[in-house]
Image (cartoon, rainbow, N blue to C red; front, side, top):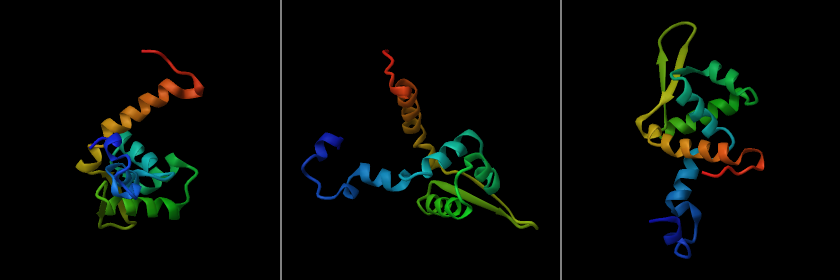
Length: 118
């Protein structure tokens, strides 16, 4: 069903495919984390923290756990001292890449309030 087909038929946005998608990637950091993993994976926790900058360790840890629970990020732990953990995208997350690419294209066309013609 398209977005238009859901209009008037749904009482709660969470009951739609859009609501499901936003529940997985919505919020301030999840799409940033996915974007960084697309660019360079696998990535260690501290490298992600460094690349994002303005995120707390607790928030990054929480967001990674949620992404992992939702099947978008996989965590690989190496049995060594000090502990080494790497994060990468799952196949499910990789199916989101065309959508994220479209968002990037939109941002490029609409950055600074300017709309570029095709």
